[in-house]
Length: 204
Image (tube, rainbow, N blue to C red; front, side, top):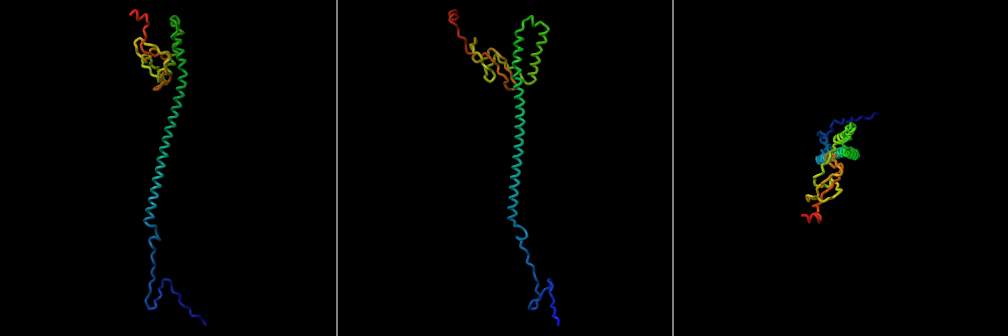
């Protein structure tokens, strides 16, 4: 005896309905939400990326600005260091210049005519040339109004013309280093009119 084999319907074949009509199988299409994220999600993601982009750009601009400020500050500090070092060295040379000028001022006429003095005069001239090449210039003091930023008052003396606060003598030369004071000038300053003595008043 053999069992009767039943035909296996192919998946693509449609089984007839009980009423004899052919049943067509239909596939249910996937919803849009299952295939791709919604428009709201995309817009939220775009907004988040825009915020990240703006934040990264701000951080980059801030880093560039900080670097520029650091570079400018470093260059300024380096320039100040060089300038201050030069000023310290030049300031040490000024007393040498003072001594040479005092020595020349005290030379007698017979010494001034000797050949060696002619060579000696070249020393302060060369030193003055070096100072000028570094931006050091002599300060004009006599006849100027007293300025505590440029002058150091050593003596106050009554004046014949009655002017007050005027430099009437220079005791030590002052020097400028470009636009700032390297060494203030030691000066004598006028202080009002000179008082007449009793004898001078009687003679008048």
